[in-house]
Image 1: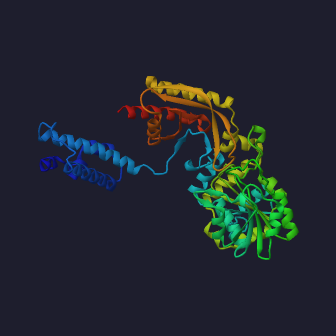
Image 2 (image 1 turned 45 degrees about the vertical axis):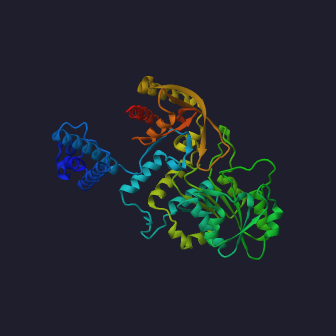
Image 3 (image 1 turned 180 degrees about the vertical axis):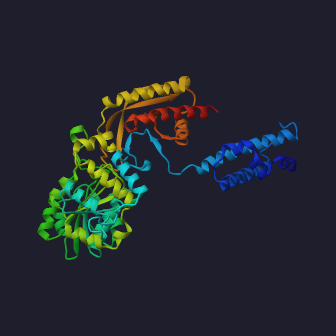
Length: 477
């Protein structure tokens, strides 16, 4: 029986010559198509040998050949489409998490996107001084902007904030001691922790105080001849509340002056504007921390700043110059795409009103439920048209999150569109949307799929509704 069924399988060439395959895959790489057909045929052959294919419904040899051929063509088409589809592709973020790490964190402003396109498609003066004709610095376009915006003497940019901390510690404290509060030994994501980054830098960690309380005297007692640096880490991704006391950056700076030791502040998420007037929790701005007097401050580019992934170091010029000469700087340097995007993002901040209007992260963070309501109503209308009686669609109030290890206590009142499927589970709909094209990310709560409009652009509403309709159709099949 197996041999009879195996004889019905078409050859690779027979499948490749079929017009149904040729027409739909015209323009696709032949090597990809051939491999897909071979893989599908091999899979079907294994199914026959395993007894998973029955001859019962096949009335004759010709019909059997046609059934197998059509099945293999459909599978091959799907395999090729999956093969040529980019692995990194856009996702519609309906989670309400503004800085969603798994979805790429901050969206870039229009000016930043244009800057990337410009330098990516043309040669640029990345390391050329056009005035003198001599070699220039890739950091020059950023340093003046950063010192202007933050009030620091000098600046340097590397590929992320962990690299910024690593470079600073390696330069200023390699082989010597760095004192930090136990309450600030944060995990920065991906299971990487401050003590591990410090160990990699060659500096030796000295912990002081307790998890919930660290006093200035704790630092003073720990300072010795081998102490190189006092480190203050802003707990941007968690809060300790209750019976607590943490030494402030200003207090640490005074200790540094008294003991002739430099102080470094790792801000993590770097704010350039205070957004507390929009109802957000108060966070220290980079300018405030620089003004408190630490010699070095580090922060991220792709979190609250709303720019590309980058680690930004600002501070005393002689220390920044030492970091620039560290061989590690070459290993963690930024490319022309980051330079272009970050410069454009920083230029937005020269005008606060423009930044609030043009930087997507800031715009999404301050959006109120009243401003989000029309978008939610429009999405709900599109969804009702798309799914009909397959689901109940409601507009409700909800809570968004900042994400990205920033503002852990912030709750952003928002408006969500809730979909309650009539038959299938909300979790199944969530999976179908995630696997669809375009991929859509929402969140499930109380057997409903919630779509938070805070993180949706207006031009994503129609594609989102179409994706939901497609997901319901797939679920029905």
